[in-house]
Length: 336
Ligand code: NAD
Ligand code: UDP
Image (cartoon, rainbow, N blue to C red; front, side, top):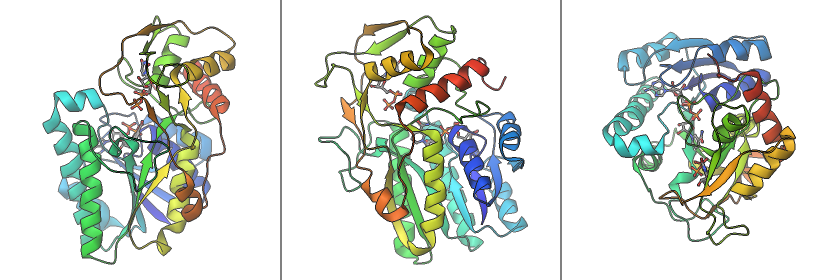
């Protein structure tokens, strides 16, 4: 297949480019590099032998999006591009609605105008809001806790309406749980700018000596050790999930949400201890107050992905920690 990958230079996008190329697909990346480096694509080439073409442009630039579709006929689009920092979205909601929502509308409109109706969209478990019960199946109630989450929920809503109005669309909404880890080569991985907000990059930066210690946000939750539970999924498993979605999309008309998670939850302290085991050294950490807005537990019911896509995760927490550490220790400053 010929696939346009928006946001393909980013963390999940670059891993998906690797898996797509390995599966024999041709990928073209559309990315404005606002949160990524073109070096990630050089590394994709090192791993696969193929350098995906980069269209360096903004999805808000309709002429550039139109030109991309005028140039060649794509079989499908994987839409990763977007801003993803929850705290920043609270401080700058306008920026999030513009960059994530408006750009998505431009993309979907140009897809339609060019007769491209197969779409895999990066959604998130954030659309489940603060869940009442876990594991989370796709029919759980949806809500948003912040502007970032609202952009995911509204894009999902938009896509449900778009597909209801026109039966030519085949749309898969992939709801990611917590993507972590890196390609086993250590050549590509997560490269957050500034101080990371997320747990795994924070842990790896403490381990490599860039940050002093991890603060565990709260140990008084109603969980087995008092710290929050999340479903950490290896980014290569996640990337493979996208290839399975492309393989299945032909026989899936309409718009269907599918969780990509392991189905297992780990507490913050369990992840810290698994990481210590993988590196063979203690990870400095202390207990701090809760972070506002955190749910005690979130993990997937991953059965729909297995049933509809024939996909399930292959890698566990040990591989996650090993590969995250391999990437961080080989690239202490990311791609810089
Ligand atoms: P990332 O920031 O590494 O990648 C996103 C890419 O999109 C970047 O390369 C960025 O430069 C590009 N981009 C942003 N706005 C753009 C625009 N207007 N035009 C063109 N390119 C643009 O993020 P990621 O972690 O790889 O996430 C990919 C997608 O998955 C995002 O939509 C994110 O919301 C979603 N997601 C991520 C997580 C996670 O924890 N990483 C969890 C759930 C969902
Ligand atoms: N967390 C933490 N310290 C940190 C960052 C995160 O204890 O420095 C906790 C956080 O409270 C949550 C879990 O780690 O329970 C995962 O947080 P992350 O931000 O990675 O993902 P999300 O909360 O979006 O699922």
